[in-house]
Each structure stands twice: as structure tokens, then as C-alpha cells.
Image: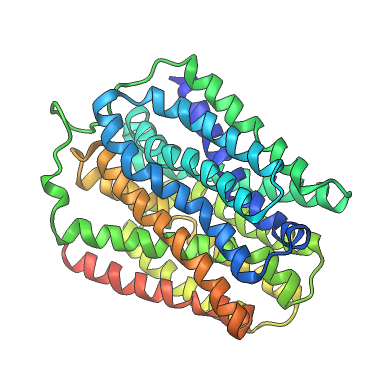
Length: 377
């Protein structure tokens, strides 16, 4: 059990590597391969298209055939994608490598959260937030180490190649661990999907889309925004993302205690309003330290969205199995597919400040959706 939990934590670090290495390296990749902002946005979004490809099929297949083969496949796909990007010489081959990275990440996104819910059933909200805090901690480690390597003159290709270490480690850990065959959180021979057909779960999916879009839409563009729109150095851009990710880690680590005192939906409503204000002001501010600080507070506020919505669903729909987490992950990563690319398209026409500022609409819509969800009990 301990080895499986540790492997799950490392797998969240591995997701952080494939999500955060591209934005840190983006300006270097754009310069070497001659990419536009739109192509840069497409490259950032390609990762999440890879997520979507495997998210849509992993849950039902894992419910039928067991989870271990898919966790091991996730390791191999991430290693292959990172290695392919490190050897890439064109925009097309970078897209292909990003898709492979995302496919491995998509499998992990579906499987790790329900695995933690099974291994640590006493406080699912706290356990899931703690597990996801390793994503944020891994993001800080990735951002700082990648930026320091780039500043020292090391190629972005080496950064990608170094990122293969976490998937190697969690793959070996899962290989040596006994794992449950299915992820049903209630009695039954298979997933009960009838409860997922209705307005309550539909609102949960909308929350995941908007919460994922708020987190990933901003995070994927923080380094480029600070470097290109504000004039920060490459290290300054990386520091902004590290501050955002570090604050996310703190927010998720503290969520277990907070959720015992404040209803999760109430807390998410308050944080949604805060996120809208922070994104709006970050698009207007001019000083690099002020914008970095705003992004830090934004990371703290956005941190509980993804894991808390998943934990709420695990309690309200205990028979959903891995298929339920597939749908939730697909919605959350849909935000990562749509909104970074949308920021790139808007930025090509109106500038990065307008592109980033547009994302303030997402937490406003999330607040309205959470209000509707709360009224339904």
C-alpha cells in the first residue's frame, strides 16, 4: 500500500513535468523553431489533446480489464513523448511528442485519484488534495530546475530528456506494487452509471471544465506573459510560474483541514470570485513583482478546484468507478485544450494582456455554476 501511494505521488510529479516544462521552454522553442504565438498556443494545447485521447478510453477499459496495465503504459508513453520532443526538429514532430506526453498524463489523470480514494477512504477530500499537492510541488521543481538549466545555457532539449526520470520511477513502483483491480467505491459488480445521467453530474462536469480552464489557461502562459508582455527575464518568467505552483501546493496541502470547517462548495464559490479579480488585475498591472505576486495568490485560490470537485463526486456518486473519473478528467483537461489556444489566438490579434484578461470570465462562470449546483443540494 505504501509503495502504491508513493508511486501515486511520483506520478503526480510526472504530470507536473509534462505540463510545466513546455511553458518554461516555450520562448526557447519558439526562437529555435521559428514559431508564432498561435503555434506556441497550439503546442501548449496539444499536450491536452493527448490527455483527451486517453482519458476518454482509459476509464471504461480499466473498469473492464484492470488498472495496472494502464498505469505502466502511462509511464512508457510519457518517456516516449519527452524523448521524442528532445529530438524534434520541426513544429509537427513537437506536436507529436506533446501528444504522447499528454496520452500518458491522461491515463494517470483518470487512475491516480480513484486509487488514492480507495487506499485512503477516511478523508477523501484531504487525501486527494494532498496527492494533487505533489503535482504543484513537482511544478515548482520543474519550473525552477528548468529555468536554471536554461539560464546556464543548457538546451531545452536536455530539459525534456531529464523529465523522463519521474515516469521511470513511478512505472517501476507500480510494477512492484499489488493494486486493486477496479475502482468501485461502493458495493457492486460494475460501475453504476445511471446516477451520472442527470443535471447534477452535468453541473459537476461544467465545474471541471471551468476550473481546469482557469488553472491551466493561466499557468501555461505565465512565463511567456511575464517575458513578452512585461519585459521580465527568462528567470523572472519562470519565477512567476514557480510562485503560482508553490502557492497551489500550499493550498492543496491545507485543504484537508479547511474542508472540515467550511463546506467545500462554499469555499469554492469564494475562491472563484477571488480568482476572477486576481486574473483581471494581473492583466492590468505593469510591475513584474506585482504581477508575480498576483499570480502567487491566484495559485493559492485555484488550487482546490480540481481535486475538490473530484472528491465531491467520489462521495456523491460512489458507484461511478473509473468511468466517472474519465468524464471528470476529460472535462477538466478540456479546459487545458481550449483555453491556452484561445489565449494564443486572442494574443496574436490584441496582445497577451487582453488574452490573459479574457480568462477572468472563466471563474465568473464557475461561480454561477457552483451557485446552481448548491441550489440543487
